[in-house]
Image (cartoon, rainbow, N blue to C red; front, side):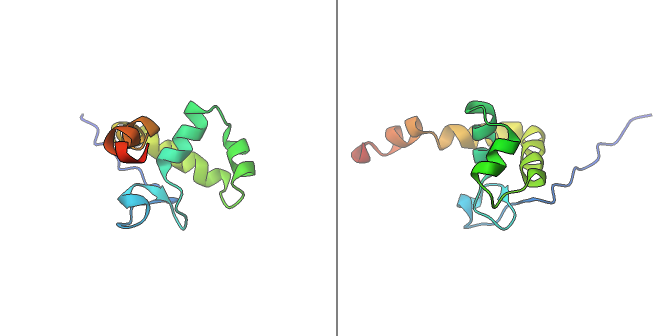
Length: 96
C-alpha cells in the first residue's frame, strides 16, 4: 500500500509579503529561517547559544526553523546564496 506524505506544520514559521522580502521567518519577528540556518550550520552556534544571543527567540522557534529548513532545504539554501555578501557585491558593485 502506498503511503501518502503528510504535510508538516511549522507553527513558528510564517511567510508574509513585505516581511523579510517574503522569505520564511519566525512568526512575530523579522528573523528569517535563513539566518537561523546560517548561525547554526555556517557559524557553528548551538540553538541554545542563538537564544542567548537573541533573547526574543525561543528554543521551540529555533528548532522549528531548523525543521522548516530540512523540509525546504533547496529554497532556503538558494535564499542564503542570494543574500550572501558575495551576491550583494556582484549585484550592487556601486556600493562596494
